[in-house]
Image 1 (cartoon, helix red, strand yellow):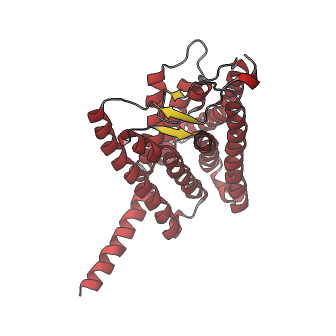
Image 2 (cartoon, helix red, strand yellow):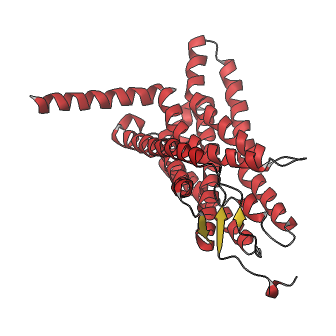
Image 3 (spheres, rainbow, N blue to C red):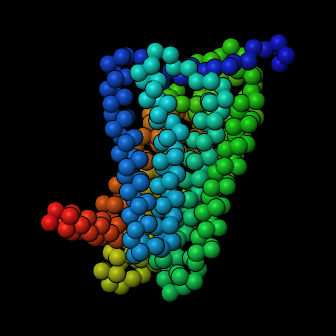
Length: 317
């Protein structure tokens, strides 16, 4: 069939997670609450870092960007998903679908690179603490952050362009919760082997390369921690990395399972659940992980709450 004779789709229909009304209503309530907690939690993290001068360090500068990425990523998917859970028509225009894919891919790629940057920051803090302030100065941190955002955006632009130049013919039903790359590519009525190669290359560049850098950083970090003679010293060094390491395991683990599989691909249901994990759970987990496992953040919370309590008492009297 020639390209000139093909019918081009103007709108896609997202099939979502379920067609059962009661299940959809339950998911709407659950995801709505989670999304509100995501926005509030990440906003409070950014505000806390902004207000407490003790948190004006490279680690928390990167954490601010991570919170912004998480909120933006969730916003690119969850509001539309909530509408479709209670709407009779689950259509999404062609250009809106392309925009959603661009932002979700770009923000996802930015997060992977940013986590590698944060791993390097922890490597310098543990393995070269005396030169930490010299190496991780403001200008260098800003350049690393800009590189994270730019790399994610460029990759997303390329992937979105080559995905939506494919003729979809009359295939308009996307069996997914959002316009995800693999789900959209499956609709094409032409050979998509080149797109699959591009997805693999993209995964290697923006997923496996940062993951390898994280792995190398933590090999050096663990090696250095094991050389510390005092138990208290080892415990303190480990706590500087615990929150970040937890997020890394969760974030990279799911992505590698989805995009880097040598012999088989995940089922459609697995893809949907993994997308829900990234769009709904990860953005709300990150502020909790960094708040609950980080003494500096907990101390800043206590200080802020104490100040608010004191201000409330003064106003009451």
